[in-house]
Length: 232
Image (cartoon, rainbow, N blue to C red):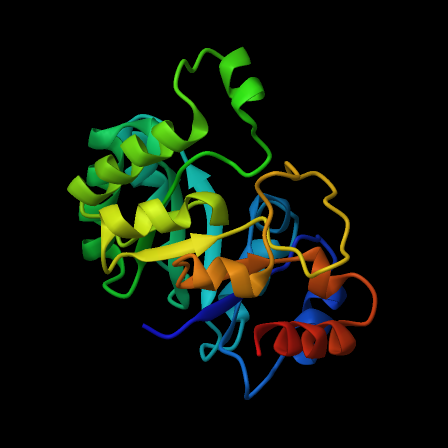
C-alpha cells in the first residue's frame, strides 16, 4: 500500500485552497486533499468540491456521529460528490452506527472508503478522564480499533503514538495519522505528547498522514520541499 500525504485545506478561502492545490503538486509524493467541517460548511465549500478536478483524491473529514439512520441520510446527501474517496466517522458512535454507514457506503459510492476516528490528537489522558472515560488513551484506541475492524471499516484515524499497536490489530486496513508536524514547527492546538514527524509516523505503521499548517502556512512550495527532505 503506497504512502499518502493528505494536505488539510482548513480554510474558507477558495483562493487559498486553489493555491494549496496548485503549489503542492509533486511527482515525488502522492498528494491528496482533506476537507473538514470548516470548509465543507462554508458558503461555497460544497459547490467547490463538486467541481474539483476528478483526478484529485478528496478526503472528506466530517466525523459523522449520530444515530444510524441520520448518518445514512447524511451519507446519501453526498452521493453527487463522486470524487470523494474517504469519509470519516467517529468510532465512539458505536458498532451499529459505523457498520450501517459502511454497508450503506457500498451502495452509494463503491470507491468510497470509511475511516474510523479514534481519540482526537488534542486529547490527553487527563482531559479524557474529565469527560468520563476511565480508560487511558492507549487502551481506548485499542478497543476502538477492534470495533472498527469487526464493523468492516476500511481504515483507522489515530495518532502516530498508537499507530504501531493499531497496525497489529487492523493488519492491512489503512492507518491515517493526523497531528503531523515538521521538525521545529509549533505544536499549536494539538497535545504535545501526541504529535509526530512525517517520517516517524510512517515508520510507526501509518499508511497515510494528514498535515496542514506545516505546509499551508508561509511558503507552500518551500514547505513541500521541506516535507520531501524530511521523508528521505
